[in-house]
Image (cartoon, rainbow, N blue to C red; front, side, top):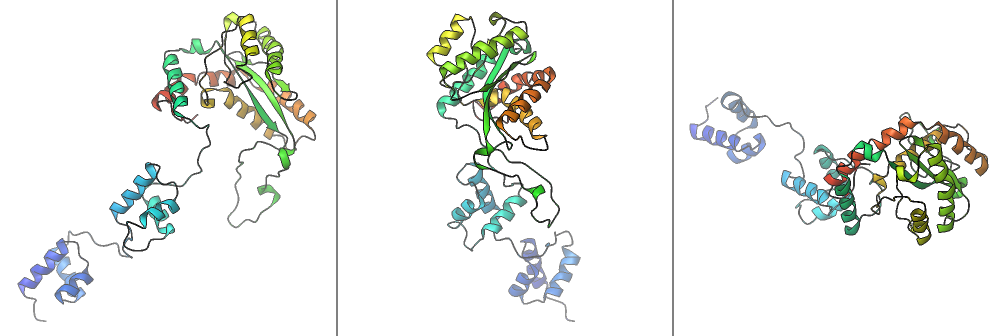
Length: 338
């Protein structure tokens, strides 16, 4: 076989250095790919070999642009990105292709978390609260009595439940969470807790208004303080900014009874550890194999499970307050993981 001219060999080496494939070089030089491969093996053995396969439809620049669209909030889903890329890509690209490239570059699709909407005024109030309490020690947080209301359904929580299944397993009663209209019935519960453990919980009968709220304070809150052997001077009372909590009647009651009420930022359940206490209670209720037959039976279960919540569980939640405040500061008043 006649050797190739040196100029042709030099041209092949130059094209190899430019990153062209064997077939592209063969088209340009007229030399067979097997000959080019031998030259590459002898004279350019350090060149990285192609992994083969179809070339990517999306360039690294386009992928970076897609990631920027998502991180900036201009696009949420692969469908949104796909619509935006139509004006950028010269070749048609499917939504599935966008999904594959986003996954390959460390991104994954998740369900958006549901949190109270934070407006600028809420963010500012949250940041002010965190700044005012960033130097509070655990001893300061021990004085706080946390309170709130929650809804409890007969047929479990309104949230999602998870279960494991085998590949190809068909739908069965094990994989279904039965539902009924209005959750099969529910009750509203008011509760409070502090460093000493859970206080008295009270079932809310009828519509919650300022009069009913004050009667709850008179009974459940006062009984809780007596149970803990505390007085209003010993504590700081926490409540959210619901209208019944901030009503003129409630404010008058707190003032007449000598309670210090904590200034609370609106839209901030993540700062209130009682939200996690409700989770503990509802998981205990969900451990029952059979749903309650009536609201009265549900209330009996609530009373029984509330009594099982330990002081340690309450203290663990209160000990998280410095971390919660730090998280709000880090987020500059925005959303946190709590």
